[in-house]
Image 1: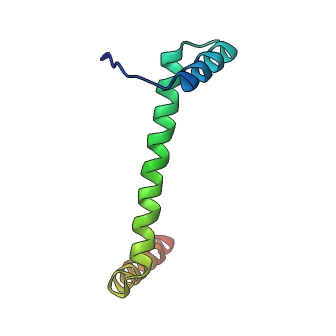
Image 2: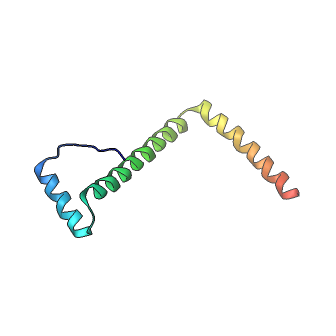
Length: 81
């Protein structure tokens, strides 16, 4: 595991210390969990934006509709087995 050094505003550092104390975990673990959570949310937001862009693109909608037709055909074939 790598070491990371950073500066934080005093007020934020005090909040971090208090929450870590309340949760009885080290500050670095609390920061790690908070950063993991935040980065996961950023990734989900990027996915949502990409789906929004696709939903407004007629060409992409046509591709998706073609794909879903193939999917239904595959399901029908599977049900017949």
